[in-house]
Image (tube, rainbow, N blue to C red; front, side):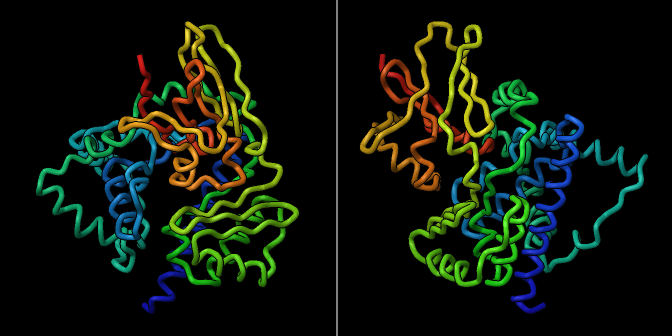
Length: 333
């Protein structure tokens, strides 16, 4: 199949996935619930190699979180031997319908599954251990506790298109994908001239487009953001005390921290401010750039303070599967 057709098929596949999850999300909002998917630790290994072959960086290892606030992956809690036993049981007692495209070697993911995974299995690769090396079980209770009617049931105001997806698409497929997201936001498609100008900018260090309804932003190797101007991300974070806990809410997400001595508090950042990391101090603005945060949202990103010092940037309130930075809090005693 011609290379261009493969890119278009990849774009259609990505769009189909977005439509599927969008419909599931609508159902889960109508009938308060959580979406369960059948992803397991082998799927995770496929995903990280897929992202790495497309030029993905360290974020490739944090894909498929066990729970992102909407979707829960129960099978990632099964070790390799347990997953094998489950599959044997299912094959014996149930009828399995396999999508014929899962065996088509034209797709890179299928080639990884059929050619690479058997080699890893022969070399005793531990899929379960690999997954949990990059995911944190301790965050599950925190995020489940954060589910309530006011926070979990909301309409999307912000979409994020992975850099790897963006660079794999043809020019026309890129516009179709952006227009599809805009439609989900209740907005009209981009004018051709505006899109072409944005695409030309995206080949440089930074691309930015603003109209009366939304912003489009993409850094050189970062993801593409489509943000409604009515997004709650443009509102200031709020904090309050819940017993011995500090609770911070922003962008329809919640962070909860045990703080019986009330030494932590919510703050923001200013230019030139630094945060302590393992190797010393680092400018917060640099941390924002490295995480691809759009420049017009950086002043809204909540920061956790210990007494009067910033100690952690709460990136998880921007996107649930993002890691707060630094992951561990370093305090001088």
